[in-house]
Image 1 (cartoon, rainbow, N blue to C red):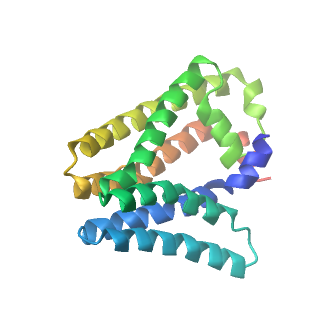
Image 2 (image 1 turned 120 degrees about the vertical axis):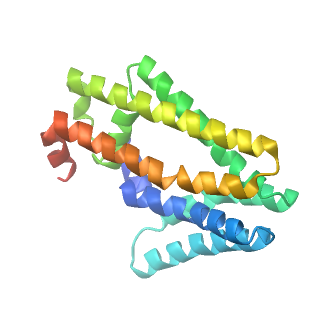
Length: 205
């Protein structure tokens, strides 16, 4: 199952591509805060463009489609209400659910980051489950990710509930998005490499 999920998500590249349209919406909405339709349109065009480029290269477009579906709900909420804040609500709720789910996965002794490693970087393989020290390492990393996700999305939720901070909410979404996730990935790769270099080598098989 994890191998199938890995193929569906397309690894790190697939995750990045699925998040690009959201970043485009944020940037356009911050620059032209009175042009909500431009922001929605730019996000949709970006998702379609990614799909077209991948199709021209004869690559799978499912990752781009994932990105399009990812913005569809938020775009509809923002369009229907005329409030840019509504675009961020699904992402905030997803982020809070992910953070809580990560902490729960540690309690269940199936740390989310361990399985995430298998899906994104390990091609779906799960040899780490046979190594107690790796299970412990992935548990600590999952706690770190969970706390960060809960914290940043609680901040975003507070800005959303305020109702008048769409621009600031967009800036926080960008600042706490890829930069923070990238930092967490670097910490995770460093920790795994320090503990088990051979695991990194196997992910490239």
